[in-house]
Amino acid sequence: MTDIKKIISKLHPLERAIIPHLKDNISLKELSRLSNQQEIETMRALQWLENKQALKIVSIKKIEVDLDTNSIKYKKSGLPEKRFLKQLNEDEFIPLSQIAKNANLENQEASACIGILKRINAIETRKQKELEFKITNAGKKFLREKNNVEKFLENFFPHIISKEDESIISILKKRKNFIKVEDRKEVKVELLELTKKLQKEHIKTDVTGRLTSSMLKTGEWKNLEFRGYDVEINVPKINPVRRHPYNESLNIIRQAFLEMGFSEMKGPWVETSFWGMDAMWIAQDHPMREAQDTFYLDTSGDLPNKELVKKVKAAHENGYNTGSTGHTKEWNPKEASKLILRQHSTSTTFRYFHEKKLNHDCKYFYIADNFRNEAIDATHLPEFGQAEGFIMADNLTLANLMGFVKEFYKKLGITKIKFKPTFNPYTEPSMEAHYYNEKLGKWYALINSGIFRPEALAPYGITKSVIAWGMGSSRIAALLSGKTKLKEIFGPEVDIDWIRNHKRIKIDLPQEEEEEEEGSKNK
Image (cartoon, rainbow, N blue to C red; front, side):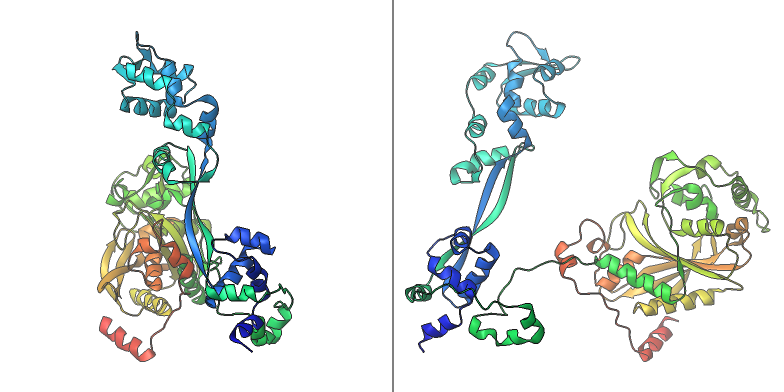
């Protein structure tokens, strides 16, 4: 059997269908019509023949133009700059409001007309109570003659842009909603010697013997070489629906909490300052209440029941029943009523203290979006994720809190952690946990935590001890995703190709010996 006959014997029915119709520069659309196939089938056949070096597929970029909403309107009513000029005369100035009304122009259209007409010196302007205009000689000439834009609209039909169109198209692109320009690719064929030989052999179309589902199930498809199937052909890439890596990371954090026996909380984005600060004994003159740290809304909200408000007021002013002196300043309910975008999810913790009447052994967590007026850098954004949690039980200590932090982050594969004391207005003692970022070569704050003060708990009737923490869940997500900057995983600058193609996040836990060694270094 000759080489050409061997090739013929292995041709797929889709290839056989197009070979009689192939010619230089034939388009994909035309070839599909002649072979009575879908374009995707024709493209597949062309790719197979290209792999056999029978032809070349040439992709030509073309730009198609069509009218948009404003140009369709102006084709009927005339260009707005010409309608503007028709309301003017050379003897007196006409107010802008009168011109816009008589020419039926919207404010934006009238403003655009002024810019266009000033550039060609078609109008003279003066400022009285409002802008006033009169026409110039250049304006009268402009009004008499048809310009390129008018000629374009008059003779327009949807078409592929030619060299002659390029200058006028660049002008029309500057006009709002005037033209629609769409880039598209046109596929054409360049024949090689092999295809011409195949055509001389008078190949007949044969659409029998297609791949079936039963062949896929039984494995028979592996023996289909004689039918011309090519399992290594370059097929179009499909982007399936998949979970965003940020949400994927949050689910890992959520699973770690659930495995440790925690229940999940929920709360609102918009809070009153009462729940965001007063309820947890943050003084009303604390710096975090200033506008450079907190996003305020321009209205107020309602305070909860009077009994709780009375107790929180007492805790601020005199320590309530704790023996503390409190903040020793008068508490202002008006300040507590201001609405804010929550700056931390601890507000939800205190909502649960009140709404669930908690005073028993329990564990809760909340993965929340929060908002602060932050300067943007590698680890800060105005919107950020936080994983909030607390444990309520008898006689909890800082050692219990440190043990929880280590155990929790061990589940996420983070073991290089160190602790240091800090200050929080509503916890005492308070503690930060820091982790070492291997990529950036720096220690970064990971968690802020502590034991709630009696002044914060007393208004809710809580007599048990409560250890609590807030960790940057968006930072952990960036760490799990292998990113060094928050904006690479969270927000509008995230790379869409990375979202489509990233590998599923996996936690690579270190060996026990390594963990113990690392733990001893951090003590």
